[in-house]
Length: 297
Image 1 (spheres, helix red, strand yellow):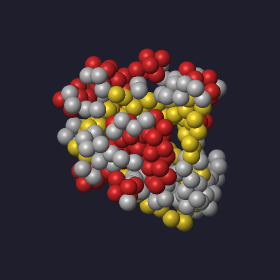
Image 2 (cartoon, one colour):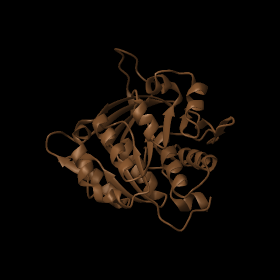
Image 3 (cartoon, helix red, strand yellow):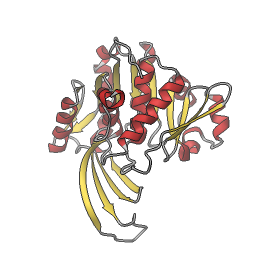
Image 4 (cartoon, one colour):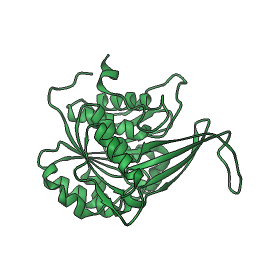
């Protein structure tokens, strides 16, 4: 893929967390206790994942989020700075701890409990305070791990400045028609269509939102409707997948970068799939996120 000489400017508004991942022989069912044979912690949160993902792919990235005034929050801030993400408008709160996620995983299956904590303290006024970023931004990226008040306000702010908007609709929530019509692209999981759109007839949804809704599944496949036909693209890891967390964020990051460089929709999807495949080869939602050099060498 060829990148234009201009560096995209992207604002990512969303969550950050520390993810504790427990590897077990099986994901426990209700009232069952299992033993973990390994555990580790990783940087996560859908917002932070996309900030790091797009920064590694060459964008100038501004992250707007909220962390606690605690050691985990400081770790997240240092990591973002080390990844060349601007954290000038990351809010720090003393009212809650930094967000965390607890992940139990076994043979590609997982159960995840997210504790938003400080992420819930991101407010519209924090977006307003960062308005100077909006004057030169090419794209806003959103996810659904922060309040809908923040999502709604960010969309209105982006529309005011004529900035493209990308939304990864996860964790799934029912989205209003206003949001669906305002954003430029939406990434959604295939098993969550009924939550986001109120129905699960995939072809009907995709035909309504031409070149706008991109449905993904656990095999790193993406489908959308281009106005003439359904388009299906997949990128296999040839059985080398070790970690599925963060694949949706990685796809969204790759798609967003392609869009900023004026790729065709098909090229954006293929590039997103490639980025998503690479993140799955390492443990941790951010660890395997590729750099441009990894993709063009």
